[in-house]
Each structure stands twice: as structure tokens, then as C-alpha cells.
Image (cartoon, rainbow, N blue to C red; front, side):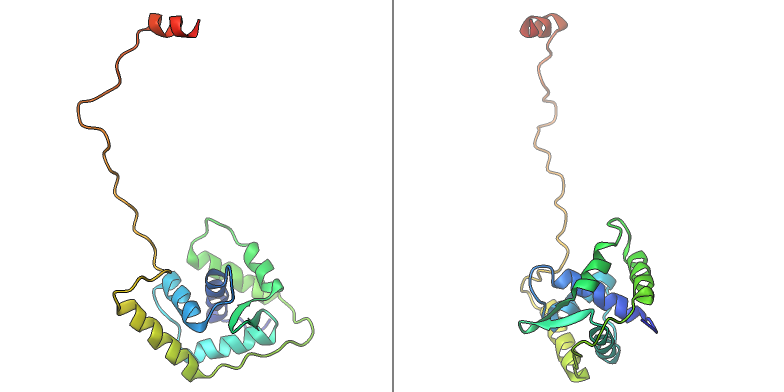
Length: 165
């Protein structure tokens, strides 16, 4: 696939996160991209990327949402689990550069206005007091279950030996 853009890799990564169990809506894809990077790409870049990736058969529309095609799922399965976001984007860009078009695929045309509406909806849900399911959950502070100064009773070597024997 030529040329390969950063937005293409970000979109594939966001789609793999948002569409794990069912096809994702645009708002969910935008939320996943925001969660990964802390920033959302421009609407025009997202629209162009959707066009490119669907033209190459890596993204498909399904049940009112969008999901990864089998080739893209295979690309994402080859990712290292412990790599950070920048390393994953680089690896996806390498995979996209090596990818060759296989036949013709249905092209997904999404207007810039659709992306703008999805971004504004995501921004509104971010500011609301409702629960954002894609937000990382805070780790609980360690709760000290033992009172200070308490410890297990001492068992002598002889007591342990009698118990074993």
C-alpha cells in the first residue's frame, strides 16, 4: 500500500480496540483514538484514511458499524503485546507498506461532517458526568488489611516436624 500515513495506522489500532466484540460506531472509534494518543486526528485526515483503508479491503462496514477485515485482523494479531503505542504504530506502518491490494473492495465514503459530529459527540461525553467505558480505570490504592503489630504465631521447628510426621 502506498503511501502510508500515520493516521492509517492510528485508525487501524483504534478500530482493533473499539471493534473487539462487535462493529464499532464512529464515536467509539474516535474515543479509542483519543484514549491511545490523547489527541484526535483531523476530520479530513480521518475521512481520507477511511477511504484508503476501505479501498484496500482492510476496513469493512458491518451491521451499522465498522470493523477490521480479515487481512487487517491478521496484521493486528502480529503485534507485540508489550510494545508502546509509538512502536505499534511504526510496526503497523511497516505492515501496511508491505500489504498489496487483493481484488476490489467496497469503498466506505464518510463525509468530513460525519467525523466532525462524532468528534463533537465524543468531546461532549468526555465532559459529562456519565461513565466513559473506554477511559482507563484507576488502580486501587493498596488497602492495608492487617493491623500494625499483628503477625503470625511462631511455630518452632519441632512443632512443624511433628505435624509433618
